[in-house]
Image (tube, rainbow, N blue to C red; front, side, top):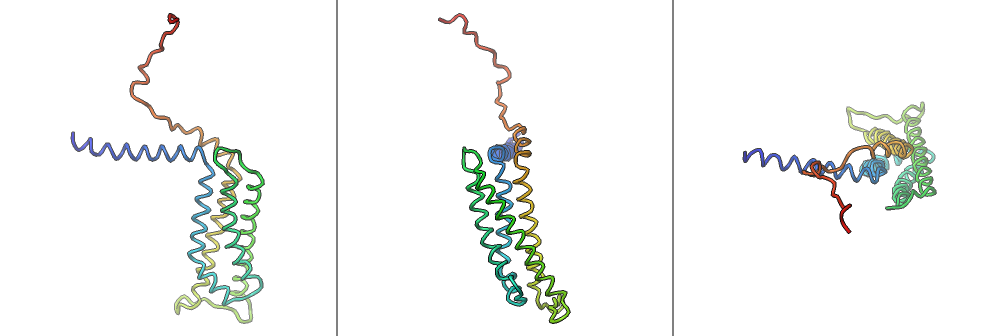
Length: 195
């Protein structure tokens, strides 16, 4: 009996954690998109050295500007995102529109940068070669994969924001109420005889 009581407590605690998590998601479903945007931005920031090295080596038109714009608008998109959903207030449509605009700029700059890498790797003259065996120019491959992953993250955020009204209604249907023991046995109180 002692062992079953000990194992039951963590289970109840975990269930309560999940319930509280679902309640917070139901109240603020936009936090899903915000979390994905944050994870994507942290991933991009951690690999910024590879992107900077790639810019320095290839050094074709607009690569530096693209790198700068991706970083700048990532920060701005996050700030404007937070301003779009104030607590206990309606969504601020102009701020949400700015969020979409900044995310669109990030996607555009990301694609331009990827095209510059592709041009450098496929051009006939002065082609840049990534040698995996010798370990030369591996940062270009890392920059490429970083930008692809970040592009996917931003695309997911755009999708989640666009479909927010749909899945927020679905989330509200999840039952997060607590069943208190004895609730089912309660009887109606008769107050008709009171004066």
